[in-house]
Length: 206
Image 1: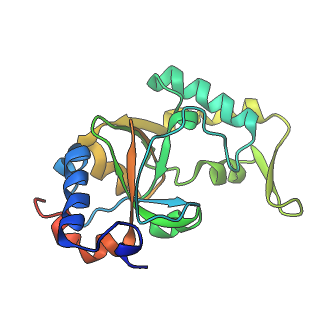
Image 2: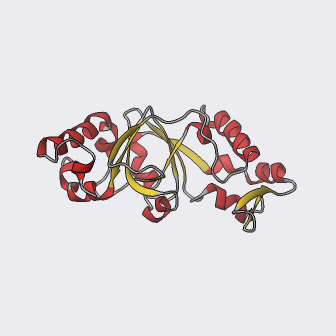
């Protein structure tokens, strides 16, 4: 899929415009990211390059509503924001991103912060492994609550497995290869082939 399908003209100036926009709007990210550390996000949309404003009321894809609301409440107590509803999920694990759709490079806006865990790679799978929810393979992999789920959640103390960081912590967060949940005003997703082709230009100052 060539770049000229998505922008008016396939010219060097268009390529530079994209790269300069990323460097300007995501300078906090590029200031701290180490060369070779990557961030990906899977998406159901098909674009080459897009600026996206996160929703404030994200609905869970796999996690039961009761768990989603419980975690939002507990995370807000700990970090001051609704991590599961407001957050944008990304990862350094390309295969994990592919599981959620077409994989793109992910770049958060300046002023971002993150919540991440050193031990939990995917919270929904963690809840399955710890008998909080059940994956009903006979019902389109719908997750169901198990009896005593709330007591089990309290016992596990899941929110205390997470920490919050800012731009200076970006490498620590991504190098866990676990899901990283970003709070940002907006973010960019960029076609993997474009970033690969222009990798040294995009990461020129690192």
